[in-house]
Length: 305
Image (cartoon, rainbow, N blue to C red; front, side, top):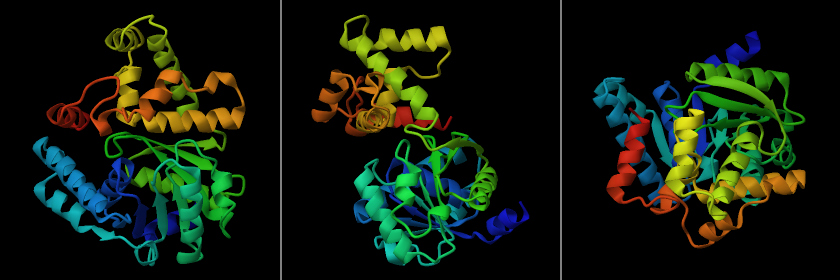
């Protein structure tokens, strides 16, 4: 374990690929914990929006007296923005990829990271379902590729699924487990199967909830009320699907269906049609619920209370 602790002490620069919901949350968390963060996105507008989101979320924490204004400024000062991957990862000891849940895109990014990063750099992916072993296979360092599946909203949620690929080394696994603890997270090691643990259990429940709506058994609010009040879930499954993103839910279910060849993972036709229609949940303003801009801000704010 000593070697892992040494790696963590020396791990001052962390690059995060993607400035979307998960990427800016991961960058926020590392920066608030004192790491120098290179936040990378090919889209300058996405980078700007990502930093604005981090700033707003920090403001809420200041208002709740969880951090000081000086803490907020220190966190923002720890983040540097890049639109070029090669430039952004130059000094990184760890890269956390948080791009769209698309296997072809992730494989392309990891090939590029493998070429651009130093030979000792650990490459992590925030994928919620795609095989770590498959991602690692396109690199020359499969022993240094690992999954770090953060939960949304990242600054608040404690769990990080740590997923070992077939070739991930014990040293890298121990390093990332210990690193996650320094972020105030609770790391849980799982094996590399489609959906891992969190989504292998969660997505069939969400899919079955959509099927229940699709079959006319009950309405949206009624289904969510049953699960919240009857099963002690803090958020109903349909509201949670909206929060995750219906396109993300569909992508995860497709990965699991392709991986297991089991019809129980087949996405509900209603989910498929909603995604085709652009009804993606909170991010698009409409999913199972209708989200105005004020309502969207209210929903996000509640996550930081």
